[in-house]
Image (tube, rainbow, N blue to C red; front, side, top):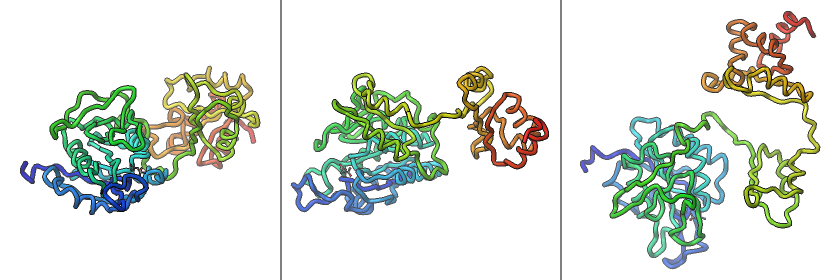
Length: 365
Ligand code: ASP
């Protein structure tokens, strides 16, 4: 291919075994992950220059067991920045294999582009005899420049197999044939050095995903708890005490929950006084008077958020009966309608003005 026809691919390097260094060619465990820089990695595979215009960026250089929420956010935001550029056609992320499936799943839901994003790693350090990293990187770039990779969501390329970030999981701690999608299989393969797809993921990802990390600086705390015979509520109590906003409970069978844990999850110590309603538009059931009545029947306050979020055009919190309408147009079109709907609590950025309006309309202090 003529040099001018080559696509532009950015390699974002994060560390892992693919950049790992051992003391001998036969040392396959106990080596240092994330020892080589992205420049070292690229220097080791000059063949990449025939496949694409390559540039490298070092995001971090660590064992992937130490990836943090902050790094995940940075990675998603950097992918979005790069992929929005006309002179970037795809991104390849070098990553440790231990948590590659988590990063791939996260990016599959938060990258906002149809351009290819391919995660790649290695099971053997860069210093190993038969290191798998160099060929994996070459294959990852081949996947990233292939037209059929557009719109496939975030992909994982390992051991000649292409997986959807939604399905892939690491199944063996040492074998190079470790990545699998147990309920389906790979989307495609590298055969004879060429990319061949056979399937595609139809679940929402990237551009269809509702998740958007633009401007997000922290992720809510969500803990994962794995059940077993003899479990007690200690871990659930600890997660709640640590402020978990959610718990992924890996239950037994079809999600059965140990009875002690179920008791802990019923929040016996919490006094529930109200319920926030979020309704994108007036057509949703949550906007209906019946819904508000249901909340009142339980002696709970109905709470609505009138704060205007930056992305309010796409995500109104309560059918656009919000501060923007109330302040910029007429309070009767926003807050006034909330009074009519018997909402008990209105969250606002303009408490003093809302207070005066409430006095005027309802005559209450
Ligand atoms: N511990 C390494 C890591 O995840 C394993 C690997 O990359 O294969 O960074």
